[in-house]
Structure formats: structure tokens, C-alpha cells
Amino acid sequence: MYWHCREHDTNQGQADCLAFFIAAILAAPNSEKTMTQTHSKSRQQAEIAFNDAQSQFFARSSAVEERDSIVRSREEKTLRLREARLAKQSQDRAAATAALLAKRARTT
Image (tube, rainbow, N blue to C red; front, top):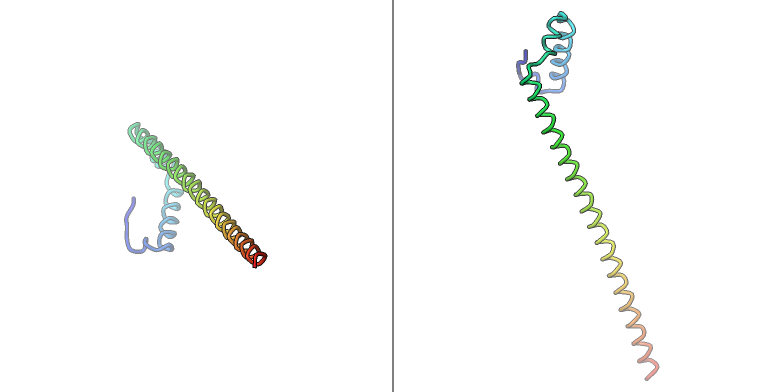
């Protein structure tokens, strides 16, 4: 029942095709509907296997997203701590320089 042409490559073409097939399914007699809804045992097993594989794929994708989120938050924290450390070192250097200049001013 599926055929392909260039019109289907556009969103409008896909929408037209979908509307055509929905109308065809709704217009079909009941015997045809039940026939398409009843699948062989091998097809049911294949669909179950596909759903399992798809579930594993989405679980893996979710795990990757979670790991990426953890890595991103770790990098943000590292950057924040590095900036704080560099700011403190700069302040300490400025304080040490000021103390050294004050000591030199007192001795001269």
C-alpha cells in the first residue's frame, strides 16, 4: 500500500499522503481492519524484540545525557573554583606587595 514519489519529500506532501491513508483505513470494511490488526506470531515476536532494542537505545541515550550533565556540572564547578583561587591569589599578592611597600616605607 506504500509508494513513494517526490511529493512526499515535503511536509505538505507527507500530510496529504497521511490524510489519504487515514481516509483509506477509515473507509475500509471491518474485515480488512481486523486482518491488518492481527499479526503472525513471528511478527509479534519481532515487534517485541524491536521494542526491547528501542527501549535499550532510549535507556542508553538517557544514561549518556545524565553522564554529560554530570560532566558539564563538574566542569562548571572546576571553572568556578579556579576563578575563585586565582582571585584569592591575586588578592594575596596585592596584600603581600602592600605589606612589603609599607615595611620599606617604615625603614627608610
